[in-house]
Amino acid sequence: MWSGDRRVGMESLSPERLHGHPYQEEASVFCRLTVKILEARSLPRADLLSQADPYVTVQLPTASGMKFKTQTVTNSSHPVWNETFSFLIQSQVKNILELTIYDEDVITKDDICFKVSYDVSEILPGQLLQKTFSLNPQGPEELDVELLMERTWDPPENLITNNVLVARELSHLDVSLDRAGNTAMAAGQDKLELELMLKGSYEDTQTFFPDTAFTFSFHYMRGQDTELNGYLRGPRNSGWNSDTSVTPFNVPLMSLAAGKEMTIDIPAMKAPEGKLQLKTDCCPKELSVRLSYGLCPEEQAFLSRRKKVVAAALKQALQLDEDLNEDEVPVVGINAEGGGMRAMISLYGHLLALQKLGLLDCVTYFSGISGSTWTMAHLYRDPEWSQRDLEGPISHAREHVAKTLLKEFLPEHLASYRQTLKLREEQGYTVTVADLWGLVLESKLHGQVTDQKLSGQRAALERGQNPLPLYLSLNVKENHLETLHFKEWVEFSPYEVGFLKYGGFVPSELFGSEFFMGRLMKRLPESQICFLEGIWSNLFSVNLMDIWYDITYGKDSNNFPVDVRNSEKEFSGSAGTSSGVEAPWLESGTALAQALKGFLTGRPFHQRSANFLHGLQLHRDYCNQRHFSTWAGAAAI
Image 1 (tube, rainbow, N blue to C red):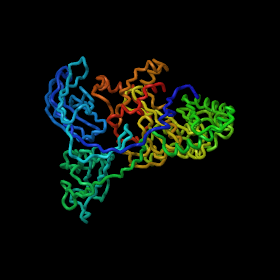
Image 2 (image 1 turned 120 degrees about the vertical axis):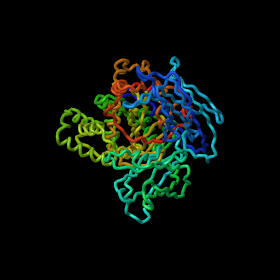
Image 3 (image 1 turned 30 degrees about the vertical axis):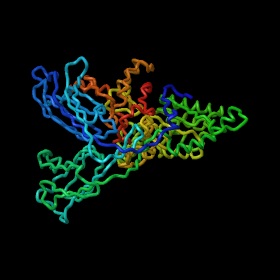
Image 4 (image 1 turned 60 degrees about the vertical axis):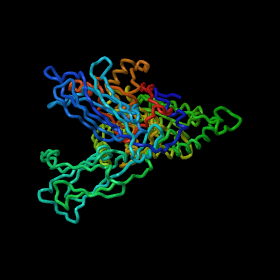
């Protein structure tokens, strides 16, 4: 069934919505990857007067938050480094090594000369592999690297996976200041700040004043080969350089045994005032993110209830003599398309027609995007909406749509919006223009801003009396070329919010809260529906490149130059399937190129929400799983 004027994907009603496998646990061994940067050849000139001043950065995002850097070789197109770095890696996740050659500049930002991503699963254990990377098949630029993979004696790590996403073991490091009963600071130290940094952790960096007692935690992967870095520095407004004010210190985390305490001295502080107590322990294994391609228990229970309603409606609509058996009841869905007010009005008309034909109760799922979600959100305020005459909601919509939008910007309305947005910001959300748009839209369509929540729509599903609503939205990457190169459907239902693509879901009341490695880190109050409508509209996900493609190619998606590989990249910094390099013009370090790219691809008003898949990594064989799909055909949005 169709409504509106734009096509949405049918993924919401695919067989994977009805069948799938829950997550599984598996033990996996660690390996040690050694990377030796040898030399580069034929690097481009930095300018007309001199050669480049190259250095290489080495990063493996799935292994640690550390980025290694070689020495800079000045004025050379054929630099030789012979520097070695190592990573402790998990063998069951997709490990992508990132190598970047920069041209060091004293005044301007360092330019990127060469960037390559390489899937280290191609390296056999015990094999010493020398690899030459080329910038492009026609170009002379090359980088020589030596790679060695070795198994370690570290205890295996227990992973939780749905064979696409992987949740690894998580540890927490508790840090407290040991003052030994003395609350007085050493003379001249009352203005110092203590900064502790744990790269790759959820918290990353935390700063405190040593003259006050404190206790806090870092959450990080147990198998992360990293260290706690810290140093004292002067206040930010003092003009001190934090790297030179006081000697830094570090503690390798692999040396900390779980459950054991360690006390370390803080350099430049007089004992016993300057001691830190460290204690590490394992986080609970249970996840707050559901990793599965099957339905959640609440949705399965709803389907059982809804089948009875659908069976009775079909018997009457088709004039059957006998009742349908449970396995004979089909799953029928409505896919309502976008298009702003036109889509909203059109959907009301289609639903009224289905109701008059006696077919509305034959529907199990009801999905929509953009303007269609405005209709859906209004209808599901009433738990019995599909059993009532729809002329009432249609009259309500007609009354408010006819109002001028300018009335929503009167001073009294603006003051109300400001107060609501201020409260949202105090709750911990990042406030954007999309949030303001949601308030304006809510006020126009309903005359006031309500406190309706998505989870509150479960009341409309308790007896299976209405179809299950699925609100669809596009997830895009802020720094990607354009939506055609990366976009993912996100499903919102009263039960869950998630990515069917990855098989990752969270309860709807937790959307917007902060997660790390599948565990809930910071819970925020559930958003009002009006703020979700700004996300469902997808209005702010468009940039100038999208508009240009729309004008140039229209709705003929076969003409879109979609790069399917790019739709898999930049997930937790670990995606990618083989060695490859990025297009040079995309990585140009010139100010003009970066400004032009930012102008064409920027989304200044986009809505930003916390990523509940944050920290999760991709399984090494995720591309071979039948449930996973890049959905390149979803380009027509």
